[in-house]
Length: 266
Length: 309
Image 1 (cartoon, each protein chain N blue to C red):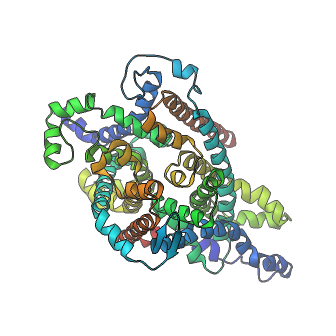
Image 2 (image 1 turned 60 degrees about the horizontal axis):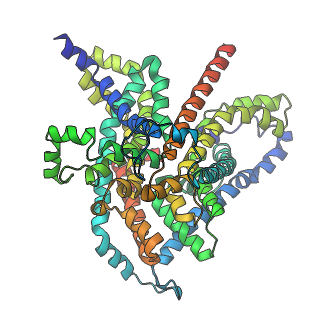
Image 3 (image 1 turned 90 degrees about the vertical axis):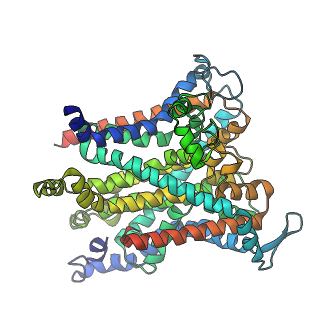
């Protein structure tokens, strides 16, 4: 029975592709329903095709405002977490110092903690300090949880780097600043970029920690959360679809550029 | 890590002109660490202390709170909300097992069988991350809708009768049942399972598979005796990365569930943000943290991969 043999041989592939379908199905739904014209306030049932939401993506009150707040927070959180995290990773890989174990666990713990616990405890701190909840408390929280991910990404890259390259630079009379800028930083750059990208995605999409520490500031995920109660405008599907397309395009172009560069080197 | 940091530069002690940079370097690691570590101490570690202190305070919003070492809060919180605690553990465990079962074939496919499609599939696994997970979770409301294709199919195949009997669903519905919540949790944390699995599968030397085949192992035996044991680090970190966030999640239970599927995250959220009973909320959050840390430590010890951390 050739079919059974074929099935047996490709069972893993079939199962894997089914999982991939499970992962992508919601994105398909989000895209399809961005062309919906719903009857009531909620966009859960298909009615008829319409491009009204795509023609007027900011037609919903406050949505694009929340999007801009989310983007600002994500940019600043990425900048902050990337700088602080890169510094920590260099210290961890390049130097010996006391309390290394304590530093390592302080980096690891935020990643091993349920978000709701960090969110709740940070809120008790802000309440006790009498801090005004809003843009800056969200930013503080985002830098905090993005830091560990940056450290992990950059550390992996710096660790696999050949220390002899820097020695060679120094032997060729490069000063410490020059060595760092012309040798160390370019080699560490892919790790730093990966950490930054991850920070941006984590911060932009964060809901739980933001939900606790936002006060009356509304980020885009907070807007979506609120709309799940009040009524979901089609426009959030437009934003979701656009984000997915931008992400795929971004990754594809960076891959094509990377391939071309490798070919040039070869 | 150790080979890079601990191997001293061979010529450093002999060359006298290298002394100044070394002395300057003595405090460099601390300057590099200072801002980031300070940030984590003030905004991660210190809040934990504040939370512990809040959990043993008494008072009201109007009159303020005072530390009275009122440990009864913990007892009251546990006896009032133990069902939600148990439910969180069950749902998270079910989602983790499902993630492993669904994620393993895909990770295996990417690592060994995808060929030139590898990068594309990888992008497709990661790309949904960039669409807000709340929007994607809301899409499950459409997929699992009462008059949708999925529910009709399950109904006509009498699968719903089985799940009704098991208590996972109720009536002709999937939405607002435990099954919907677990399905949402599985969906949301699946990439966290796939990526570590893929990383550890990719490191496996392909020649080991050939060797197993040469020694007359059938494909399934090869998987059981060679591939799976070698992928254990990925399995351990994947299950942790799925279980921990799933146990604390309240988004899926709120959007896809009902009042009967409330998890501990929902309780903490409501207590903190709506009822404003800070001591109870802090106590619950503290219990959740302690429970997760205990379970994770036990799990890592048992699986014998302590170097993972």
